[in-house]
Length: 535
Image (cartoon, rainbow, N blue to C red; front, side, top):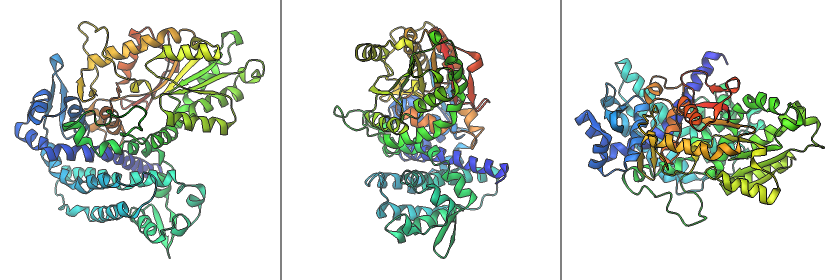
């Protein structure tokens, strides 16, 4: 496959992720009449719009910013923290296409009544009808104007994302994309007992060009292999579909629908096992970037090295396993592990993540402690390590992957006078809109909590970020920013731009080591960064 074809498929993947969040969000606003009202008024303040529709202002803000990131609105932060929502040249045509999402929204709501992992016939039949309508372009009339063609393509790719994304993830987690299936022809009965229905499911993907079918036997095409090998890229976004099934309730109803749960109850807004699976696959791409930092630290004289590593928010344990392998195989410390063993700690707030981490560490045959930890309470982690293991948190290298944005919210104790935030993000806590200045002050206080514990060896971070919605809209098919903003915005997580993140860290006395500062991609579209912050 040549690079041009790969670039086109990558464009499709990003648009699929856009669709997984845009379709349910846009349809919720359409059903409530918000989009019609915006076309009538042309420009409104967010506060007034929320009051008119009885909406939770924070989640309404997130929803409208999603549409702005798709190019269908203009989202502007004005003086005195006012947010203005304005229509643009695409709004009327784009809003007119939102009803094409109806079948998609029905599918994700209906599938919520069935098992999260098993392939069951009833939701498949709904998917099959949706796929047939998609193949017929939902009866969209031929487009004379280029602008209309682009909008139709955008919406159809959104729908395609809903068709392929959840199924791709489910099949991948169940072994469909094992090496055997990708390298050999196979029959449906080799994978599923309901061969007839499963063959019809594979036919949907064959119609999309993912498989070749001959006499009831399937084999992957280059296009199918491209997506099969990137199934985990869909995992995190798809894991939030339980939340998007009720996004209308989040915006216009009970903002606490996912949070008013009995103590110890399973999370309702996200499929955590899937989230951990998707995170592990997607994050592996960034692990090699930190190798140079780890090699540098663990090639120092032994008295200048950390005693070990603590990975707060360890997920599935992949990062800490990777770091151990790098140290063992490529550093001075790796030749001295008998005399100076590494003290490894995987900490996470979520019990499902701890369970997966523990299993993976055992399988990797390395020694590590797996314990509960809270990103917002480093003092508790420090006390636990001191009391139960006789080691100081500050003697370890603190590492984190995509976690600081998921810190528990607390109102800032001290507000920075006259702070004018440079972030374009949309932030909420339980439906309440948070000003961007509040979020920056909260982030500063968060870093201040950690500063005493990272003063010796620093804080090594891989972090997720947002970019301006206008920039996202100009680069559709080149970034997953819309999906990141929606999944994190509706679940009370706080991703800010890279430059904002680094400047706020500096306010807390944590400055990046420039030679180790990397961003992905290395352009204005960067939504991931690697930094070693030092006090």
